[in-house]
Length: 225
Image 1 (tube, rainbow, N blue to C red):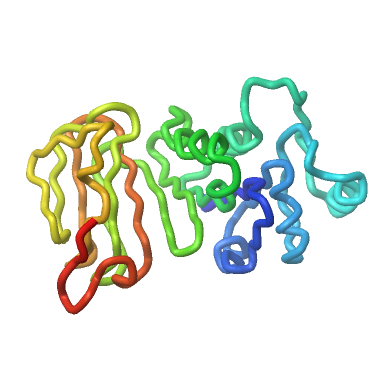
Image 2: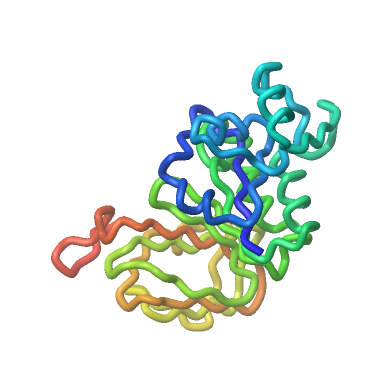
């Protein structure tokens, strides 16, 4: 089941993601993530969180239209997005796209990226979507779809990642190790889509820029980092 989760990013415009939202079998809003959905004319099936980002008018509109509100205490241990992701897994989501998880406060953004490692999400395809950027977590292997020249970065998420082998990238890795404190994996180039990355151990964040080379592709050569 395909599920879209809308997080509460500042001034989020959901319109660029309308196709994903409207094609989802289930739409979940993490608290204030309901607001850009209402602006888009879409009602989520459920809103999850402490509801501190929604005024009474928005809450009334949601409840009167049949949206379920799962309200939690404000002094909870989890963020609203964490609760929404766990809920998505509980209802059987196999593919989850998260919109609005990036940008705004750095602490929120870093924590949202780390949520990709939630044990409840293992075995599911989960992506954080932003403007022409897609973040996914590689636990074993992943295909890299896209266009020739797209920028691809491989970033260890929790310590070193070992046994990394890539295919279709300008700077290949063969049974390599990327260290958490080093930036070696940043700004590779997709030459032969779909590319592929496989790892032997660790958690690897894959950041794919759908830029067709705008960041570094110039006449068949990559610019230096």
